[in-house]
Length: 153
Ligand SMILES: CC(C)(COP(=O)(O)OP(=O)(O)OC[C@H]1O[C@@H](n2cnc3c(N)ncnc32)[C@H](O)[C@@H]1OP(=O)(O)O)[C@@H](O)C(=O)NCCC(=O)NCCS
Image (cartoon, protein in one colour):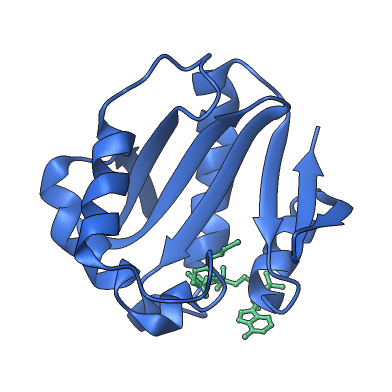
């Protein structure tokens, strides 16, 4: 069973391991592993708990399986709704963990942000990510800056 809980500063090492792994960042941002400064900056932003109505404010969640960290869900306030992202530790790929994480996120994030509109941006080559969104009712809305934009209303 996969459980989501708020991300803590003590989860930094787990997150840094994923963010510096090129298998994980291949379809994220510019595709390059993150340097230590970027990792620290993003974690600080995620932990500072800006008001949820402020565009750009973010909340992160750690996914655990039998107390072991297996992935993270990130969420960010956008004009149009709440954007979600998800990373699974490569040791655990292909076991349905991302699907379970997104199922939990769908139960939690609309309530956190007070919106029913969820967004995800996916590299068109990221087949596993596109599949898990489509299976959960997300629709491909548009393509922008090299990424497919999926929405769930
Ligand atoms: C994309 C990612 C989250 C998938 O995690 P995962 O736990 O392996 O995914 P799941 O096991 O839940 O699989 C999701 C679906 O994709 C399918 N799938 C898995 N790997 C696949 C692959 N390489 N190609 C095509 N489909 C694949 C699964 O069969 C599953 O579909 P199903 O429900 O029909 O069986 C994971 O690879 C990851 O963290 N990648 C790096 C970060 C990233 O790209 N995040 C997404 C950014 S939008």
